[in-house]
Amino acid sequence: MITVEQAQALCLALVQTGPTETVALADAHGRTLADPVQAKRDQPPFPASAMDGYAIRSSDAKVSATLTVIAESAAGHGWGGTVKTGQAVRIFTGAPVPRGAEQVVIQENVTRTDDTISLGTDAMNNNNIRQQGADFTKEFIFEAPRKLTPSDLALIAAMNHATLRVTRRPKVALISTGDELLMPGGNPAPDQIIASNVFALRAMLRDAGANPNILPIALDTPDALDAILQQASDWGADIIVTIGGASVGDHDLVAPALDRFGVTRSFHKIAMRPGKPLMAGAKGTTAFLGLPGNPVSAVVCGYLFLLPMVRRALGQSDVLPRGVTARLDAPLPAGGPRAHYMRAHYSEGENTRTVTAFDKQDSSMLTVLAEANCLLLRPIDHPAKAVDDPVTIYPI
Ligand SMILES: Nc1nc2c(c(=O)[nH]1)N[C@H]1C(S)=C(S)[C@@H](COP(=O)(O)OP(=O)(O)OC[C@H]3O[C@@H](n4cnc5c(N)ncnc54)[C@H](O)[C@@H]3O)O[C@H]1N2
Ligand code: MOO
Image 1 (cartoon, protein in one colour):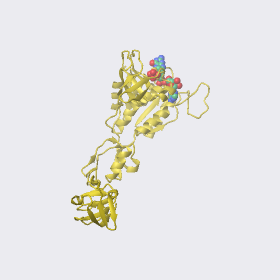
Image 2: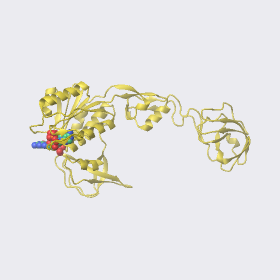
Image 3: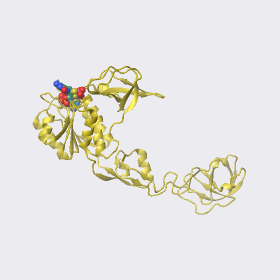
């Protein structure tokens, strides 16, 4: 069986970066910026006052100096004149600092009488002026690719761009397979269970920036599987994900269905726990990922294989989950011949990150998965570990 790393590389090789489209800035949160963006102006575009007060010349900034207030500069209403020796301009936060002024004295440090101000003892401490271009100049380039955060949108707005080029959301079809499955809210027969993992997968895909679509559950018959694969293809899926039917039982029909559909298989089965029956392939530019049906196996494989494929389709550069080091808070026995991604919980201390592996690691247990905030990796044949030993975890 191939390793997780080999399988990840093979999965990524099945995906191309998708086309780009233009979106309004207000709709760009979570999208992946495709092209670099250059600022259209300096910010601030003029020397701006950081405080409410009086703009004066530095040479006048002396305790008890008395200056004449000759004009006012407010945000959006600058004053076009020049401040001369002995003069002050009433100024407000965000307003352009007039020529000649090199300092803004905050109003708390000034005594005003009619059109005259007298400077107090604390008046000289700060110049309270934001220089033109202090945040960015028009040479500033916001680099791509990058998944856009709320702060990014504010920055690009300040750069005076109303629209952006982003990569198209990859369309991901999610197909649950199995005669035992029913959608939540139905009336299950005694031998039926509820299709669950598909909702975690859909949510993960949305968060990652994909366009997921839960298709109807396919029964365990060749005809039903052929029909649902065709439906996913007709919808224009970039990635078709099946859930269940990946193993070797008499009712595990996904691999032959993919063969009939004309999918070139890239691999089937990996040295991983949970997730051993994982398979992947491609037909033309459509990628296929066959996830195991066990709820936890499907979700763990979603994090390790499906999301990297989506990130690649979005044109992102850092696509694989990033592991961090944590210290064990209890010993672990030696690992086995498959890389084990254990469900675990980590917490951050002042100088340490500590992780607890859960006792129950059955790949059917969603209660345990819901308690987990990370996967703890035991590589193949990992030796026994003691308290405080470092291990790699993947926050989820
Ligand atoms: N003889 C062997 N049996 C099994 C092997 C093996 O190597 N030899 N592998 C085991 C492993 S590991 C896994 S993982 C499972 C996965 O097999 P399948 O992908 O074929 O999954 P199913 O048999 O269809 O389902 C497994 C389990 O999960 C439930 N399920 C399926 N789909 C969903 C869904 N959408 N939501 C919630 N639960 C789902 C299903 O009812 C079963 O209980 O095979 C082992 N067997
Ligand atoms: O590999 Mo299976 O996913 O352990 O249950």
